[in-house]
Amino acid sequence: MFFDDRYLSDEQRQMRETCRRYVEKVVIPFIAQNRTREWDMDPDARLAPQLLEEADAAGLRALGVPERFGGVEVEPDRAAQTFAIIATELARGDSGLADKLVQNWKISVLISRFAPEHLQEHWFTRYMAEPQFLMAHCLTEPRGASDRWLPYSSPEVNMDTTAVLEADTWVINGRKQFISNGYDASLYVVYANTDDSKPMATGTSSFLVGRDTPGLSVTRCNETIGGRFMNNGEIVFDDVRVPAENLLVRDSALAQASIYFRPGKVLVAAKSLGIGLGAYEETVKFVHERVQGGRVLIQHQAVASRLADMATRLEAVTTLLRHAALAVDEASGEADVLCNMVKVFASNEVVEVCRHAMELHGGYGAMLEVGIEKYMRDALINLHSDGTTDVSNFKIVKAMFPATSGAYAG
Image (cartoon, rainbow, N blue to C red):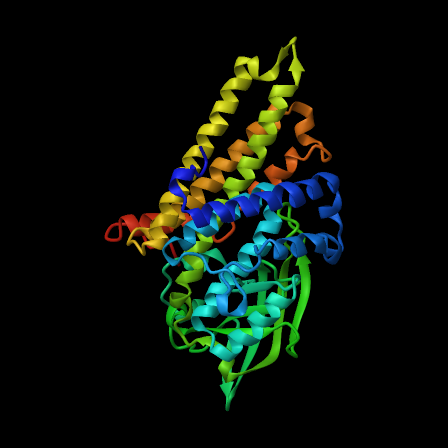
C-alpha cells in the first residue's frame, strides 16, 4: 500500500529512505515536543533553524539543483514521481516544512531551465551555502488569483504588476499576495505584465529578483489556519530595478512555466497524501491502544468501518497520484487534466481522512497537545493551494469537453 516498492527505482527507494529517516528522527519529534510553537505570532521564531539545517545535511534541500553546483539531480524521466514521493514523506512529518522545501525544488528547476549560466552560478552557489535560503514564486495578486487560470483572453484582466524596460534595466511595480515562502525568501521569481496590448498568456514575463533589491518590501506574513511552518507573505514592488539579464522568459512566461505548474499540482496532492498518512498512522496506533467499553477500539465495528474507509481513500489517492506524476514525466497529453484531477481529489479525500481521524480520537481529536487537529488544519489549506477546487474543476471539464463546455469566465 501507499507507494509500493515495486513502482520505485533504486534511486527513488534510497531518496525515500533518506527522507523517512529525517522525518522520523528530526521532524516528528520536533512537532510532538513543540505543539504550540507554530502559533508564535513572530514568523521568524516559528520553525527552528535546526530543521532546515538537518534537511540540508540529508541532501533534501539540494533536489533540483544542477550537480555542477553540488545539487542532487533526479532521474529526468522520473522527476515528478520522485518529487511526489519525497513531498509525501515530508508532509507526513509537517506540511508547512514540506511546502518550504517544495517551493525551493520547483524554482530550482525553473532557474536551471531559463536563467543564464552566470546567474545560476551566483544564486545556486549561495543557495547551497546557506541552509536557511528560501525561494518564492510571485504570481498571485490582490485582484486576481485562481480565476486568472480560466481561459480569459482580454487584456483587461492582465496582471496589475508591471515591468517596463528602461535602457538595460527592468523597472517593476506592483503587489503580490498569498506567496508561499514569501515572508522569508531570499530570492523571488516575479511575474509581471510586459505587453498590455496582449492577453496575460502572451504578455507576461518572469524575472529573478533578490530580496535585498531596493524597492522590494515584504509587508506582512499571512497568518493561515494550517501549514504554519511555511510563512506565506505579501510583497510590494516600488520601482524595483533589475538588470535586463534578470529576465527569465519574455512575454510567454506563463506558458513556459508549465515545468513549474504541472509538478506543482502533483506536489499539492502529494502533500495532501502525506498529511493523510500521518493522520492515519496516528489513528492506527490510537485504536490499537485505547480501550473503550471493555474492548480495544479497533474491535468495535464503527471504528473498523471508519479505519477501512480511511485506508481506501488513501490508496485511491496514491494510485491517481502515481498516474498523474507518470503523465507529467512522460509529457502525456493527459497531464494537465490529470494534474488538476489529482489535486482536487487528493485534497478532498484527505480532508475526509482527517475528519475520521479526529472523530476516532473522540475528545482528544480536538486537543492541541495531541496533534490530530493539526492534520485537519493542514489538510484544509490544500483545498485552495495551486488553484481553488472550483477553478480546477472548470479546467478539467474544459479539457474533457472543449467543444461543448461553457466559458466559465467573465
